[in-house]
Structures are given as structure tokens and as C-alpha cells.
Length: 338
Image 1: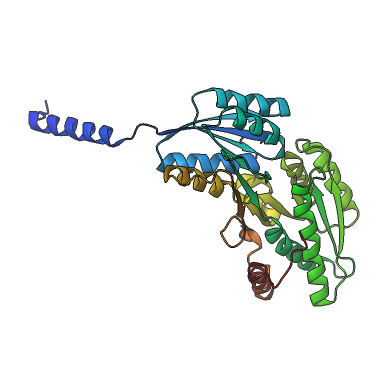
Image 2: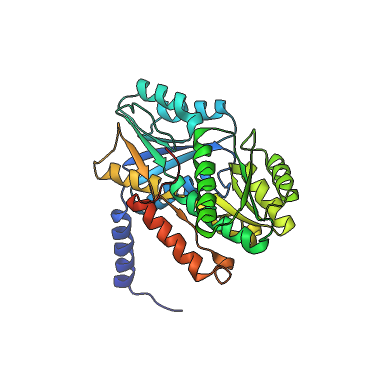
């Protein structure tokens, strides 16, 4: 029989106790209320969840997440966290505006974070985070125009399938269109743009039908921006072998089935926003009463890598897109969004 010395056992116990004592008790309880759809939607919700988990890896927090499919879900879950033993409540998008403002008034001692909506004025215990997605969708439009022209120089067409017509969606589509215009002006081309808005963020079948209609009209690239609905458009593009541009996250990784057709994705870095604001709270730098702007300059938005298209996109176009991003940052190029 193998013997273990008593001193060795004591050493193991001592080290185990030391390791346990180094683990901090949670200093913050954080509640995340999703937007519509699954937490693993390959986009908006999943990015926010990733940011929360990144904070959990570094900070002394405990957390809970509630998945929502209706406005009533969002409202009830915000109030659930506000009434409970939670210090920070995070909610996503315009559907959360009324309940988060009401909850913040009722619980002035708690901290609230509203992602992807600008509250004006912003209450002192709410931080608003907004994304200058126009700064990323403009170069996406430029890339889409170039690719469509490469595929069919006689009848180049780009299509977008967007969510319901609200300002947060228009910010994607208006600047995407301006990026196509910029390409047309630079190269004296006539790339056409066809766009449709869905009536629902969750209806993947509607997204597929809308994408199908654009592909039938000659679209060689589909830009899909609209949650689960947009994902349906991406799957339809994959079915036809049509190139596409994703949104919110790098959808090459979050929806592997459509990865081979993705030129890039127009990313909102919700993960960075959630992580950085929770970190700020730990450093006693809570931005209550403020609207934080996430843009190209602070890596709040960006184009995802080209992945499978890396060798197919010319260095000239890659360099031009970098120059466009620089021009947007220094103000010499306008995205067309207010």
C-alpha cells in the first residue's frame, strides 16, 4: 500500500484552504433581461450574455438572465430583478424603455443599464449605451456593392432584409445604402439596391421569404439586420449560394451553418459594452445619467473578418475599406446618418 505522509496531507489541505480564501464573495448581483428571442440567437442577446460571462470571469459578481419573447416578458423580468436582491439590472433595446424607466424611478438606489437605446434625458440611475452602427454598415455597403459588381457587372444588385422600420434599423439601412452610393461614385458604377422591412424580429420564415423575393430579383448579396428574422434571410441566401452580410455579432461563429456565404458581419459589440460598464461600476465610475456612444474609434462597432472570402477580396478593396473607416473616424467621410 502506498503511504502518504501526514505533512503532505496538511500541505494539500492548507493550499486548498488558501485557494478557497482567495475567492471573493460576490460584490454585485446582476440581472440581464434579454431582447426578443433565444439567449443563443447568434446575435443581439448572445453578445450581451457573452459580455456578462466575461465580467463573471474577472469580477466578483453573481448573475441571472431572463429570456423574453414578448413585451410583457421584458416588463415582468425587469421588475422581478428590481424588486429582488439585485444591484444592477441590464435590459436591451427600445422595448425595455418604459419598464426600465419606471423601475428606475421606483428603485433609485439601484443601477440600471439600457443597451442600444438613447434615453433623453437619461435618469441618474440609468446608463444608456448606443451604437454608431452606421459607421460599420457604410463600409459593409461599399463591400457589398463591389462584390455584386464582381459577380454580375451587367446587372449588379444588392438587397437588404431589415427588421421593422424603426430608427435603430434605419441606421443600418440608410448608411448601408450610402456605402453603395460611395462605391458607385468612386468607380462610376450603377449597383442597384433593393430593400425590404419585415414586420417582426422573430419570424424567421418571413425573413426567408423576403430574402427569396430579393434573390429572385437578382440580388447577389443579402444584408440581413433583424434578429431571428434576419437569420432566416441568411439561411435562404445559403440555400441559393448567395453571399451575405450578417449583423450584431460575427455570425461566422454564431451561426456556423451559414459561415461559408458570409462576406463579413456588421458588429455591435454588446459584449464589450456590458463587460466595460460592469467593470466601471466596480471602479466606482458608474455612468448613470449618461449616454455612452460605441463607435469605430472605441471598438464599439466594426466589420468582422472576411473569413472564407479573405483570398477572394482584392487587397485594393481591403485597403479602400480601411481608408473609409479612417475617414469616418476623422470626419472626412459622412455615413449619411444624422
